[in-house]
Amino acid sequence: MSLALQPGATDLYLPVAEAGEVLDPYTVHTYYFGFSVPEAGIGAYLYFRAQPAFGLSQGGPVIFRGLDNTALLDAEYHDYRATMPWPQVQGNTITTANGYVITVLEPGELIRLQYTSPDGTTSFDIEQRAISPLVARGHIVPGEEDHHAGARREPGGIEQFMHATGELTLRGERFDVDCLAVRDRSWLQVRGEEPGGARRSPPVGWTPISFGPDLSLNVTSMENKDTGPAWLGVYDVPDDAPTFYSGWIARGEETRAVVRVRRNALEYHPFQYSVTRQELEIEDDQGEVYRFTGEALAMTPMHSWPNIAFHDSLYRWTAEDGRTAHGTYQEIWWDDYQRAMAARPPLSR
Image (cartoon, rainbow, N blue to C red; front, side, top):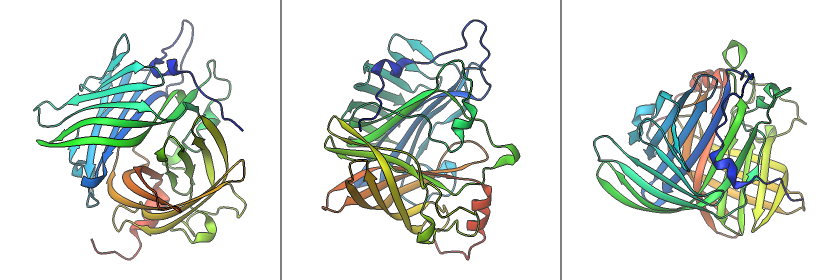
């Protein structure tokens, strides 16, 4: 079964309120890009979130390295700004107030990402060319769909794998960039924070994996209950509850739906708590099963909502046939889980 695709024109879709329309104050448009230098254990989180009801935005680049990061500012470079004006949009170029530039060279196909720090010691100039279809997705945050009923305009989102090439200078040290990286974006999504400050849900992991145009996939899932996850005893999850929220597989130009996901966490970070080693088994709608093992090469706390813990990672994934892939693994959780993990016997750093 082929999944719905989106037109490339959505790359420049940043709608504001139409005449007579009142947008929900929690409405957001988002752009996520990333890249990595696996041999140096470097990952990059390039995020931009616009809030059209207020004419505000936030975001910017965060570049992280290694596993020994405790706080947001432990990242190697950080210019994420919580409150910025609406970005400048000139033709096919979006520029944020902190100088992060997204240029849509070919909608749906080719994107250029640029940034230079105020002191000039950190910069990147990266081109990302599509290697998978522009797959449509509805939402990625659990419960997000509950806020979309009756919306005047349809919310939407995309996910796509890119071949990223270019150059990174990190505090004066230069690196060539040549990697595969996922991107996603959304528009008119309503992402309100949960009443009472947290959602009663186990941690959620986002696992994009690409070996090239012949095989790319992405699922948003939780660890299976029968694997003995760290959340066991914190949340009461029925045995038959679904383990994934969204998923797709691209085999060349063919896209397939995911029908089953089994995720098993083998190891957790001793003080960041995010999963550092895991197994992933995915079945598509044609009955083909894919199995991978993953290990974190870099990890850091990352920006999200104040009542959510969010960690970004650079992972190395190994398939059953021995092929390896590198890319982001992102995980979120809420306060019950944080408190439970913090109460565990301390592990050495």
